[in-house]
Image 1 (cartoon, helix red, strand yellow):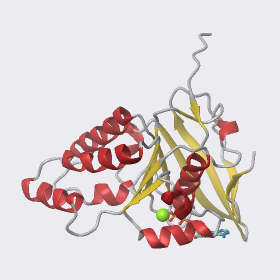
Image 2 (tube, protein in one colour; image 1 turned 30 degrees about the vertical axis):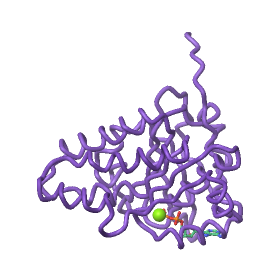
Image 3 (cartoon, protein in one colour; image 1 turned 135 degrees about the vertical axis):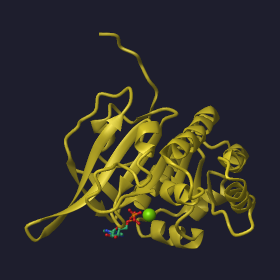
Amino acid sequence: MIIVTIKRVPSGITGLDNLIQGGFPDGFSILVSGSPGVGKTIFALQFLMESARRGEAGVYIALDQRIKDIRSQAKQFGWNFQEYEAGGFVKFMRPSKGSAWDRNIAETIKGSKIHHEILPVIRDSVGEIDAKRLVIDSLSTLTLSLPRGFGDGEVRLFLKRLLDEMKSLGVTSVVTSDLPKDSKWLSRDRVSEFVSDGVIVLDDVVFGEDPVRILRIAKMRETEQDRKGHFFKITDDGIVVEV
Ligand SMILES: Nc1ncnc2c1ncn2[C@@H]1O[C@H](COP(=O)(O)OP(=O)(O)O)[C@@H](O)[C@H]1O
Ligand SMILES: [Mg+2]
């Protein structure tokens, strides 16, 4: 067997790294998908808090919620992001109406071309604080903003460019995708799972009368992963995976 040592990035999710040989391979894009309320945003925040605590910077592109609400959601778990934002270790970015991002999407829809124009927005945010980690929450909101006429092929090309760009920036990233309950796909756009390096599916199911949450690693390139589903809990300290 050839043993190749890959640098691993600790996920920050309690119990997860044991299932993936110590963490996400450095520079990978990990898709975290699941139905609403299952814990995707908490996962993404926990991933960024881990890097901030290690003194590495991270960028959070907030497409679904206001930054104010995300900060207060994080505080529930004792994660005070403002402290790290002040220190230059975390940057939240929410494209607002009329922002470069927003204009680019509008122009793209008009011109019906793939909007690689949004890529500089990500590049600048990452460059500004020399980020090592990136979150896009959610990727489904981004792909839903693509022109209506886009088929799977165009969406795939767009996502491929986005992920290539993230790779060239050298960041390890978590991107989230909303899944309708009982979906047989792994992402809302049905394409992200093919282009991302790893896919983690979060699910909540009801066993008898007890609702339980289950985490499953559906894909992790270059990693011998545990393929079983694992129970997880959302505790006062964030997500804890039971091994
Ligand atoms: N302090 C807490 N303790 C336990 N569970 C919590 C706590 N705060 C939030 N939750 C759970 O987390 C869910 C929200 O998680 P979130 O990451 O925002 O979901 P998603 O992004 O997948 O829609 C809530 O529906 C709730 O079940
Ligand atoms: Mg969310």
